[in-house]
Length: 235
Image (cartoon, helix red, strand yellow):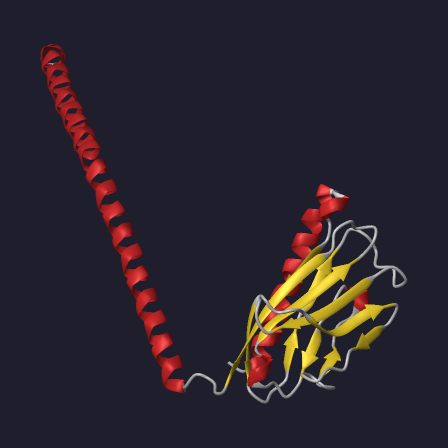
């Protein structure tokens, strides 16, 4: 799967999560905890390609451009000082840095609570932590999301993908057999429980049939003398 496809899938998943989380938070109605920032926490990018750093936020308050504030920073490690490369204060302004130059472009939509950016011509030196900070008054707290970017020099080989698919198919087959076995065992046990009941019903029916036969025979015997008398009278 290409880096762009992974990015699109991550963006779609993030959008769904944003809707769900936003709904729950707004129902809770707590201004102090109504800000939430959603990002793809671990992201891989192919060296020399373009990658989207997705960052969306949810808030129970409408975004007011004059009050809204946002910035992106980069850290090589968690202990390093953040290097700001994108800022919003009434307008979106890229911060030209030695590391990124003009490779960072705003790719979000403030109307949809999306403050994502793209980084073009990704380099190995771009690996690190990307911080997305969002403040949307009257929310009291500042939202913060962290993306750990890893740059790879090549995509996984087709053989590796084939092995992964084979392993997945094997596991799926084993699970299917296990489920089928459980169903068969359950059916066998159910039949075993039903057989004694059927045997009892059969015995009761046979006993009832024998009794009815005896009763019928007795009735015939009682009726024979009467039948003989009627025959003699006729004669």
